[in-house]
Length: 143
Image (cartoon, rainbow, N blue to C red; front, side, top):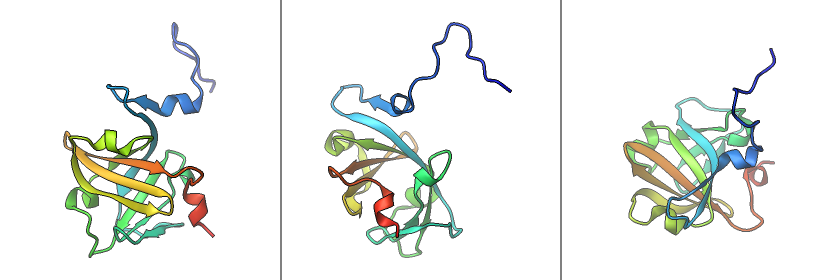
């Protein structure tokens, strides 16, 4: 079935434009990265993150940008991280993103060249990610 555009709306934007979000104060640019879902089930292609004792999947391997997270029993992550889904954004300024926020984990190096931090806001968990120049993404960790 062909998809029709609703009357009065422009055609779909380019994918990159769909995912870019400016902070209200314009201090940083965010790009949607993924949705994180905690699980107890082993997933294909998991990568171990030593800093938080969690197994994660590459959201770029999922058609809806889902990252599955399987925490070890002795993970230092708080209950909110272990039980709630999270929204993740890549950013060009981690400090601007977390200023005045309730940081629940991090910042820490999740993968070589990737610094992440998690905040809890409005009953939800958000992750902010910053890649070093030239380091991106999971593909570098896969063999």
